[in-house]
Image (cartoon, rainbow, N blue to C red; front, side, top):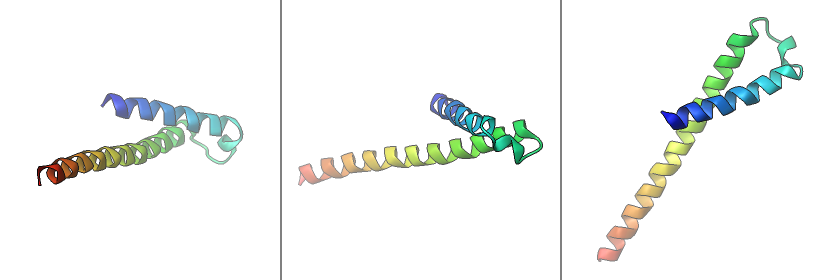
Length: 69
C-alpha cells in the first residue's frame, strides 16, 4: 500500500504540472480530471512494477531448480 500511495502522489504531481501549463483549458472540472488521471497512471505503473517483481522471483526459483539438477 505504501508503494501505491507513493506512486499515486508522484503521478498526481506530474498530472498537476501538465494541467498548470495549459491542460486546464481542455476540461471544466479540473480536480476530478487530475485525480482520475493520476489514479489510472498509478494503477498502470503498479501493475508493471508488480509484474517485474513476480518475474524476478520466478527467475530466482528457476535458477534454484536448475542448480539442484
